[in-house]
Length: 267
Picture 1 (spheres, rainbow, N blue to C red):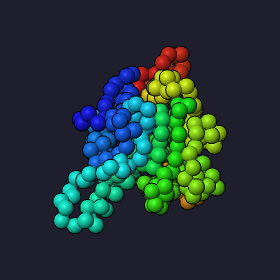
Picture 2: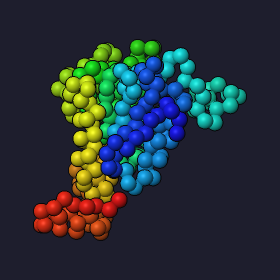
Picture 3: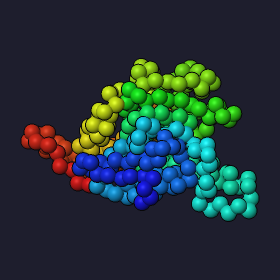
Picture 4: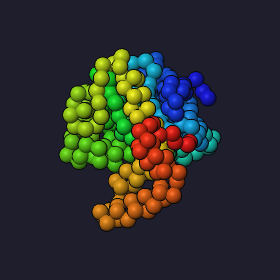
């Protein structure tokens, strides 16, 4: 694993993934993006991993795309500039989709600036906790581009509502941690030095439940954002629930409850 991404196991069943370009405020480039793709693939294949905490080294979460140069995505060969630019775009945007596709819940511990690609990465996560120093900004518009990028136009309205999303997307203004909590973008705001502890606490709460049930819940919640009707949602839930009932977790959960003990779920 490249040292631009650090991966640790700070608690049972929990991976801590740290973007490690602190001098660049963890601005995304091809190397960092590739390393995150690789880390998420490894986590998805790790059945002992039940929750992932994503954060940034230093004083930034992710400042967006590295304006000094992204580099080249895998497969770019310099023979066609338009194709290579599109390859870079897909390299980044598919990472946002991969966060969603990763079966384990991803918890963003937003320790500082989350701008452009950074806010998209936070929005793509399943839970967001923020340090008081955190600042969110849909910043693509600030460099002359559309702010509809990296799934932000899809994610942000679903998290905070269309009216607030329009205002943030069109003005490109900064959003502090307290306001982010007030509008529902983040689940909690804590002092800077307590952020990692809070995120790991949330991850351990997730990891305490049956892994299959948690994975189905993540999948179901994201799918529900695209399901067009209540009836379709209920039909989807019915199939998920019957699938879950055929696992070993319900028996263990019920037995643990009746015996007044912690449940021990298989990975």
